[in-house]
Amino acid sequence: MSADNTNAPTLAKPIHVHQVNDRPVRFFLAPNGSEAFPWFAFKDLVGAAALGRDVEERFSSHAMTSPFRDDMRMQPVAGGQTLIAPLHMAQGLIGAMEEIFSIGPALDREFINALQAAVEAGYPELSDVERFQLILRMGRHHLGADDPVRRSPDLGHADEGDAA
Image (cartoon, rainbow, N blue to C red):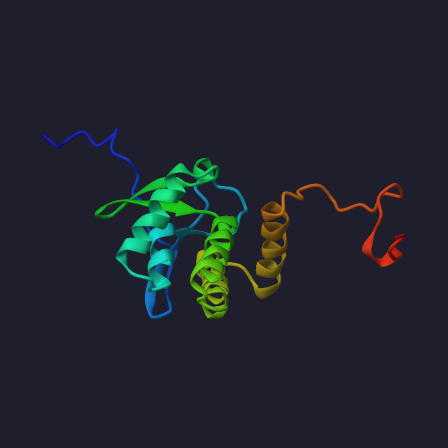
């Protein structure tokens, strides 16, 4: 008789693992199935900054108590669970590390290259044109702009000059 695994959580496999600052960062499809940029393993990215274990633990602890904690998910993976987060969390995290620790722009560039590779790995069946269209939709989702962009006559636009 086999064990009943109907209540066992589904283990997520990374769609891509990329070396960022010579450290592996795992990427996963969005847990809600939306057309969002791939999510990343939070501790992996913090570790890629190579700021030391105590800093990694401080950032991870802060993430779990931050106003953005509901934006992240604990994801069952082989060997346990890992905290995964969407792109805006990576942008904030990298920005904070640049500001606090003066790490420079290299980590951000490497992360963006890794994100691009994760999109390619996550959707290998798409043609280059289809993948580009998907990236545009992902970008609109990321910006919260799922509705068509419209210019409103009652809103000022940057190309209209400054009235001051």
